[in-house]
Amino acid sequence: MNLRSGDLRTAQSNYNRILGAGYDAHTTMLLLGRATEKPDFVDVGEVYLTRMIALGKVRSIGDLLQIRGIHTKRLSGIVEALAAVDVDGLLAELEAGGEGEEDGAGEFEETEVPGDTFEISGGGSCWCGPDAAAIGWIPYYINFGWMRASIGDNAYTRHPNAGALDTVFDSGNQPPPDSFGGADAFRRYLDDYDFRAALYIRNVKLCGCGSGERRLTYNYFTRGGYTPVRVLLAPNTKATITHCAGVEAPGIETEWGGDDVTIRLWIRFKLGGLTNFGSWVMTGEWAPWAWMQMDYIIDCSGRVRIEFRGSYIPSQSFYVGWSKVATRSMLNNNKARIDGFLTAGDCQTPPGGLHLSHPARAIPCDEDDSEA
Image (cartoon, rainbow, N blue to C red):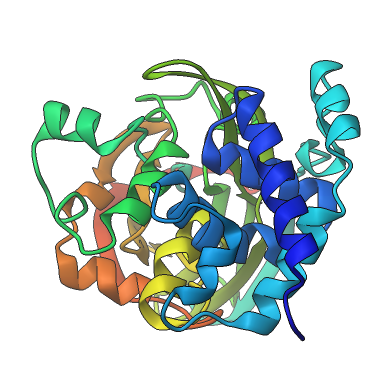
């Protein structure tokens, strides 16, 4: 498939019209991706158009054909879709405050596991463990100049693909709070869309440790996050106008041991086209899934251990009893860990590890106690 010069000119014109309306480069690409309903438009478009045009590396889309390793067939589909965008309609919709279907939060309900059982001989009381939660997020810096002024040079600002990584932080979030009033307050916080992924396990109750059958009940919750869409109001001043939903793949399992049981909850999620940015430039492959995992281990003596795992990107904050106990910051990554994420490959699980092992204690409770 060949790129047509007419499409190139129209695509360039449409891009510049939206950029000229006051939207920054990455927001322009997100809006155009939504308008074309072309999932890979934002991904590929941000790699080539945003990185090269926004950074002033090319004067026209046609110049992109000179970039080493360009995939002409994919790019031609992107340019064709961009050329067909109804820019007048899109700008009118934005002025009217329209946000599109993908921005709605929808209904996100927790799931109750009413009775996972395991036969074993022994005594008889119940143990109720503390609630535990985690939030994935990306620190927000409007550009790397602000980052250097705030925390100094680091592996991101010195990275060969710093231009792409700059845009990742430009789509960042505010740090999550130090505590929540409970599960309802946690879910209300997520309704502001200022996060990348979240999960929790609560109402954990292990009963029957001294009888012929142990019984485990608990509630769990997962939710994929959003990419902020920001408009440039003035130099170094941006406002968030909407959020684009990401893609998620959660999972849950229980594993019974001799004296304990592990609840393993995880979520795999895409950070959005912005992360594909650096990955495609470096490897020619889409970026992998990010991931978060919680292993909640409770035993028949009331001991609890909560292990928080995940990829090295994004940052993750961890909560026990709805109070923050630690944060694992992606800003602490070295170049090898950044490269490991960007080069893991299309839809693969990137490197990560155990971020925190937190000891806790369950309290004695009755089997018919109501939920907290």
